[in-house]
Length: 258
Ligand SMILES: Nc1ncnc2c1ncn2[C@@H]1O[C@H](COP(=O)(O)OP(=O)(O)OP(=O)(O)O)[C@@H](O)[C@H]1O
Image (cartoon, rainbow, N blue to C red; front, side, top):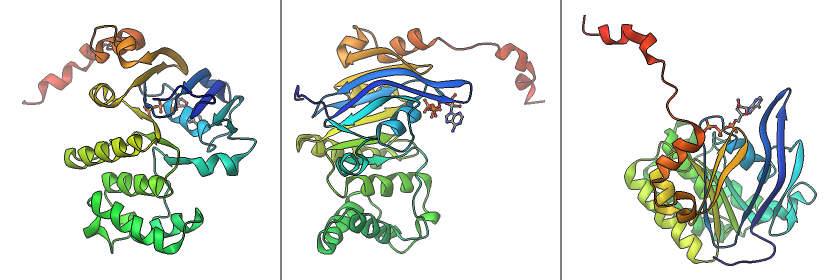
């Protein structure tokens, strides 16, 4: 990790309102260069909304997002050059095959066709998508779509990778490959912020963790600072509230053998 000025990603006073409802209620966050930063929170906490505003996919109601000091909303072209994004629900041009999609992305990013071809072939091989070469992305499984989306995000070697639930629906072997690939990317000087619900993933991978709930930062720091000697799962449950209970009302579920 490098303590740099400006940080790889800085969110200041980020707010998003949808009508009367506040999805993100003022988030301040700095992600230092070279960090593996985890964003965790319960369903509906505002993770996707925050990450979407951070990369220029969703306009904030208030606040700013800067990538390496470049304002994402004032100078979107320069900012987006530095970003690789894997959105939660991958909005892909899915009537293309995986290699075609990578070529399209690479050319849009201004990479030379030969370079796109070489990198695409390597990413497809490493991510185990070789057999899917002739299939259209629309016919990929959810996990395969995640992997081709990740390949698209990596192709232009961004300085910042923003990954919304990168391990969701991905099998354990592929998850291992993705971890390894992200480690290499970090070793090369990159920065990753990713969201997850899985505390074990956050504990294994992250240098720093932010827990958010109801659109606010509830805890932020190094993994050890946030854990304070406890399992992350326990800290998470304490901060966001335990099980809601009330399943007694579903007593009929106990009658399923009759
Ligand atoms: N386009 C939208 N219009 C209205 N409300 C929205 C919209 N997008 C998100 N929300 C609301 O904003 C809140 C935060 O949603 P968000 O998707 O950011 O949460 P999340 O932490 O990513 O959740 P999950 O872990 O379930 O993916 C939720 O209450 C959600 O219903």
